[in-house]
Image (cartoon, rainbow, N blue to C red; front, top):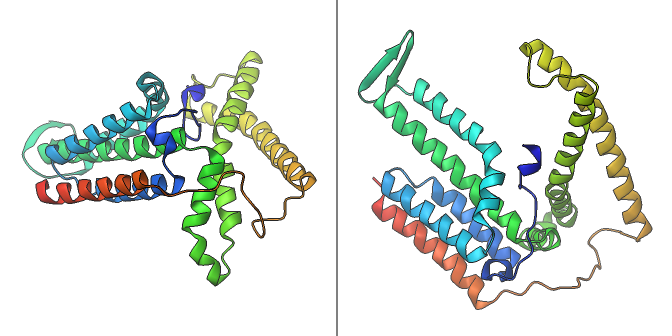
Length: 265
């Protein structure tokens, strides 16, 4: 399951989504995140899902690859649906299971919250799948550039965020290897009581932390060996260039937001 998680991975391609400026993709993703919260009926959520599907098609990223990477997230989405279905006491009472009362409003609210979470994860995943880590770093640094006036270390913060996304798949692979090594020694991660499972995780966390610190030290040593001194005076191999299609992309997201405002309940 850990190998299927695609958050933080980049799929090289030559689609129109890949060719967009990183700043426009970051801006469009941020606007989409805000627009998602405007949806409050089936029509608005249908429009958002059609937008996501259209974006996946023109990005030329395999839908099967995205689905396989989203499968570990489905449990979290289903859990959100169950929690809201139980906690929300609105609308008509459907049935009772002991002390649990299920209302129609709770079911609908749970579905909307689960769909909203799924939309947010899909859009942010598409951002990392179609944007190289170095472009993501440059885009973040450019967007937050005005904060340099207040002595905010913009370059360092953008680099930290980019490295964090880049090493998510690496840490997942390391976790998978350690789990297989522990299972070969008789550790059971799936069976037993809750206390037993918690105890089984401890032998997994210790080597994972050690390996993470070792990898961070190797990365710092490699950066120092290449005379890295921060963002001051640095040049880029590929400069960011905002084109007409970037403006059109951001404009389409704004139009999508206005449509949702008109059709929402």
